[in-house]
Length: 506
Image 1 (cartoon, helix red, strand yellow):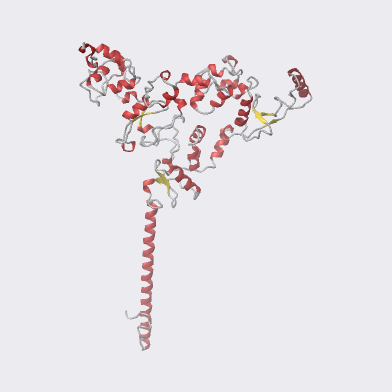
Image 2 (cartoon, one colour):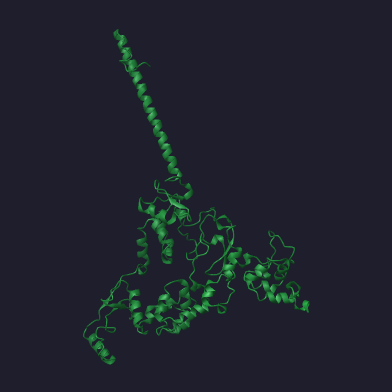
């Protein structure tokens, strides 16, 4: 009985039962188990239905032996062991179900797979990232494993807990928002933009949203070409809400502060309710026009509005301030042409629109000497900055490295601005206050760069040598004048004393 009550060790179980237990483990658990002992290593790596769960695992058509890799004797020929490189950029490490825990416990739980991976395979106090040439880290936003070279200095960025939720739970949260809240949320970030506009049951809550693609207007057909949305979807816009959706009083005040900021509530609340670029004035206690009063019925208001239109009376409109992004591209490029290279570099770090506008306009980069429009023949492609997916092929984005040793910043504010933004230790860049050139931080001594210090030392030595040679020439000329005076006195028959000639005792 004692032997029967004793728990059976896992390694004494049949292979089929062990594989069945492995099939219930997540991808990260399988990887960690292969690093525990030889039995787990061979059991998991020799079972194709387990390793094929990994998206990055090579299939039968890809299992070509690499002559540069050393074959492991513990596995049969043709089998590839599980590694972190197979998981990297392929599999999401989200194994914990949201429905098994409370929302707060799930978001803040340290036992999520991304935290577990970073704790086991990420940098730690004995292997910090500053001293690691290579390594792995799981992102808290997309839950993909990537190398250190794809991250900045801050490997664990602050990701809002909302984005760590599954898509189904985020859509459930969106369903409790009003139509105006959905519209405003689509203008916040790319993730929420695609979540809302790709879900028909959310956008079709707007009565003006076209449900049939055949009824799309020309403007809506152009919106359907948005590359951020799947084919057949158009984003939710204000013209779709015009004359169709009714906003509550709280939504009216919200859209007044969002669409027309800076306008006082006492002077009138502005709301975009007309299918027009202009804004119609709303006054407290009135409807959508000046004739809509509380005592008139809907039919009477229609009759009076029609009579007023026939009499030539027009409802007043007002134009709001023109945003910078609504200007044509040519005007924006003309404005960019008045900026310095440093201002253009900082603007490319502000938003996506300016990043694409500035980097795609090559005529703005004629001034930076380090900018190359196309790779030069025979040049090392590894030294070229990598192409960005937001830019067309062959377009090189502007970076600080291109301004290095090539651009002189303006005196005063630009030098202080660059040193305050990019002069921190994490960037290791600095602008010299003497030569006004951007260089690496290790080129700097006390107060200025090494080149300026050497130039200053050279000038000081040269000035000292000039002073020394000037004194020597003065003494030589004095001796020549004394000899000439002595020779003239000797010819006249009397000699002058040495003290009179200014030669002294020497």
